[in-house]
Length: 141
Image (cartoon, rainbow, N blue to C red):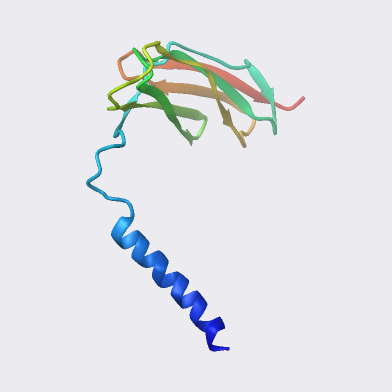
């Protein structure tokens, strides 16, 4: 019976010691660091109207960066009344070797849900003006 109780304690102590002495080193610089930035969007595509209860799928296009060190990070949408505000973020890696091909955002899609009926204004914040504005109508059959 004592062996059964000691085994989990021994495993826990072994794991603790392993992580303490050989675990992740916060001073390790072998992995790349990432910096997030607001992307410049060239254009968006979406339907001009959708039925109530359906998702509004917005596709985004634009150049992320000059090489593979630049990648898409995330969408930051917010719904304020009938305004759909969106900021698109990319991230840049300080890796020493990256693919040399230009990195593009080719139709990354944001699904906006739970819209009520009416006219919505889509506002895409840009790294450099002007921002992108468009409209979509949500209707009942």
